[in-house]
Amino acid sequence: MLITLGLIAPTPGTPLDILQNRPDLRGKGTLANSLYYQVHKDNTGDVYIGKAGLNRAAETNIITVLRPPTANFLTDNWMEVTNQPNPYLLDEIFIDVDVPGDSVRVTAQIY
Image (tube, rainbow, N blue to C red; front, side, top):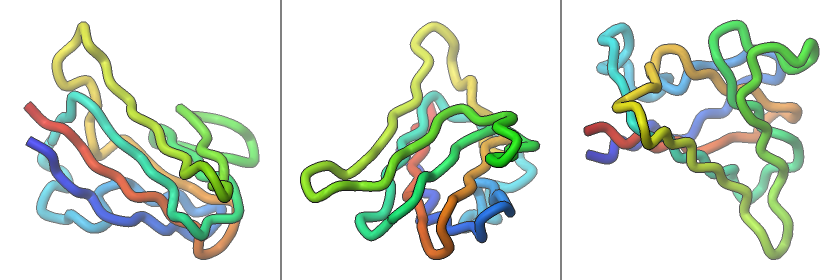
């Protein structure tokens, strides 16, 4: 089942968890097999995906960095583990940005 987690738009330096738009899932131990991220077409800075304690300035707890889109490429990332069922605890994934107003769309696949 695909669960849309919506557009996440943190204030730079203040990471938001990916359940901002889904309070019904917060604190329930919801696990996902894979996560899909796509930057917004108007982003101008980097988007950081990480674990609790994500700190882009100190470069700690960062899982991946998504670059701004270009005229020919919209940056995205598909995180999937094939040898372990549902390894991602949604409560523990956070997003931060370099530029105010930048955002990322997140979708989770749950089995």
